[in-house]
Length: 287
Image (cartoon, rainbow, N blue to C red; front, side, top):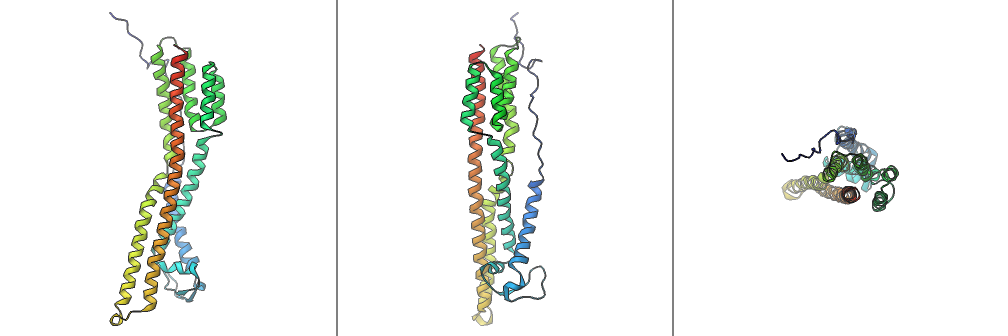
């Protein structure tokens, strides 16, 4: 009977030592609600302050019918009820951009990723795994986290005698893949808000523009086609303010989304390179 090799799932290749990252998901559902509420407050109480209009609506309420704004800031109030939603979306872009910037900056770690990988390669070439682990503790980014998980398994496999080199390499590769699967979701989290606002912001602005044009054409149809100049101007203002806010919000969301995805791509490339470095180093050094 042919001799059977021990499987890579023996006790020597225990389960991954990588622990799932714990993070609160509160910002994902709480921030949009807060941003929309704040957007309404800015529109209603700042832009729609009675002191900013020559003919204020003293009744107040949810949507006071102020007329003749004093200045452009209060003129935005005439953009209508779509404006607070657009302001809320702009605040969402700012909020999630700050959150992603802090998270991705932490994930990039300290120093250059390329320099970090070269240092690890150097230490592995000299069979100094502990020095490579020390480099991971210094870098402290997502690439370093994945590399550290792989190096721990790398160190274990050096002293394992009941597996051949190919099985040891597969064990290291599996550890790297599991660590990667835990790191990447944290990098991409909440980017969906930016990508959604990129397209939805323009559509909502278009809705506000259509509502403003409806008001304009309605004013033209009044009084036998003579129209009401004030209502006509207000309808056009509503259309243009919504268009400007929507385009500006979508443009900012698109820019930030592209910036963050570019940074994530560089981290992903570093993670892929780190996994290749570990497997190739072990295969060539511990044959």
